[in-house]
Length: 126
Image (tube, rainbow, N blue to C red):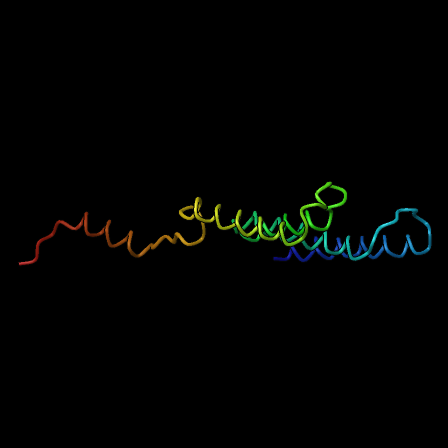
């Protein structure tokens, strides 16, 4: 938890420095502030989704990044709602395929212990 806060804090400080340096024209890097902020947010959510194996979070983070950079990617003709619909369909499809590998499959340690103790318990009560 501390490392996540540390890296997020460093990232925010870097963006603050970039913002001030571009406004003072020290760096001639032109960007839209909110595009960069949203990019950082969606990349963070994408990494978190991959880390926690959340299919929907990963797919929708990619979809929103595609929406942000549609012009650069050359997919403007698709439109925002089409990209969101495709992301929803991909998310549902992948969730159905990988359902057994996701968070829904929980291991019950008590159940395992009961089976192993049942199998090894050979004493008979009279």
